[in-house]
Image (cartoon, rainbow, N blue to C red; front, side, top):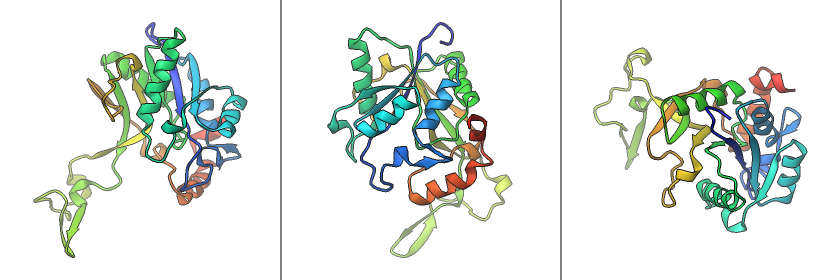
Length: 237
């Protein structure tokens, strides 16, 4: 708990990934990807429960092996086009029917494994201190939008009209991108008609870009394994 509020960590992990077969239980540093958000959540004292939401029996078995509870979701919420937010609403409603009314959900995607307990604690503290409805993690953008281009009929033009891409990096305005590493929100206030996990009065928690890696392709997974030995995850071996 934090400030008297009950906190549940949710790890969404569907089984039908196509870019990487069985992505959520692929190996990272000798453990399945799914293990890392569970391990980090268990090391965060403010978290009261850890739940894996999945449609896969194999993923469910891994989640239980590492100490998480498992809630199975309908197949309709585990397709390529299904939105994570719909699975979150389904879990919220299921818990509510069981008499569980958590104040805070902490969303931890298995594909963003380099977060730390301190990152989660910082997000929770900001969420409480700023009296927010929702919060997401952001990191410095890999490409500043003032250096981005769009091309129409083979003719390039700056993505931001009037931008000068050759301005030194130090003189460009700071730019950030949403990492998807951690989301914090009040599930009971989550609107039924939104597709965004950031809603209401929402805030940002800036995290180290070196811990904001997201695994989407096989090359991302290979890079993550290379980075593993020098990463924050080594503390949890």
